[in-house]
Image 1: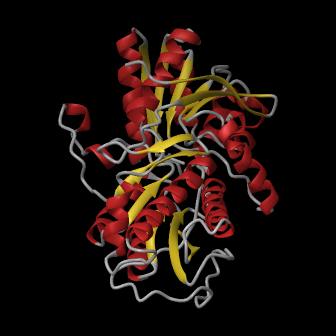
Image 2 (image 1 turned 135 degrees about the vertical axis):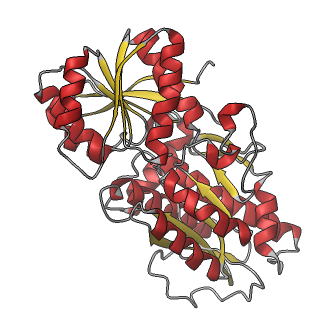
Image 3 (image 1 turned 60 degrees about the vertical axis):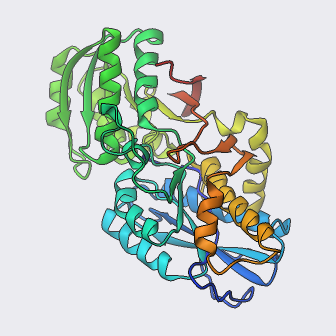
Length: 410
């Protein structure tokens, strides 16, 4: 998501000269993973833990916590106990940057999972990169984060070597939605709306480019302030446009009310969005009027993957109060990629963390490859996930139901 938005894993990490603390010597209120050994490694987590997007953020945090606990139970890295340090960014770039600075200052932090929002990631990347601290997002989908601002102009250049993600990008997600709407749903005339944020505007742009390339018509375009829940002005434009579908680039706090108001106006057409609206919260906010709306999200439905069965069972068994939501599996895999990198560094150094552990973990991340909750987890030369699968979901029967999974055929 957001470049948005969903599977969240938490663990504890260290940097710099690594005077490593003994297990249990730290008062960590964010996670209480037991087991492991005498060296504490912290995995940081940054996500919106309060506010409108907290459903997704808490799913991320819990999923990371589960990864840390399971690594400790299995004694997966000899002599190492993993803990998490979870910080709340409230989906605000300024808070994300402050959190990044705080995590960098903690010498025990060797990797960070998050954030949810691409705009928040933009504010954090340089802070982590300067410290050679690995960052793995389970939800960011803006292509520029890994491929540079000119990614769509023929010049791809990785801006920050420390940034990785397990979610696929909007360069694929937007066009995938366009192909489904035009070819499968037979929608030919779209009204495009976005929230002007990094994720929403970028996603809407890639959707629009593919939809028009296929022969679809854009009936109109507009922007909304996601903090305003009265969308009557744009709803009137949508109703008068003759569009047979609305594409929204943004997240569920605004998408839900927008969908409800579109239907209330008499325009009985579906609203479609990306992974930023793929949440149970969208269903609550759009009400029964939202039935028939569509969302794309990264990967295949976690509940249908044989590789995810154990994750789903363990998450339930752990007793977390909140659902793992859209990014749970990706958060777990993000955390586990850090754990795998730490394991390699420890194994290569005779069973101990070296003085330059952060730099060594960063180097090890490039070669990480394992079968995760969401399938094969590995990274390409830009730090992007090699798993490019996506799914279209329809809101029906009070829940999101998968209708088509696949990859973008561009």
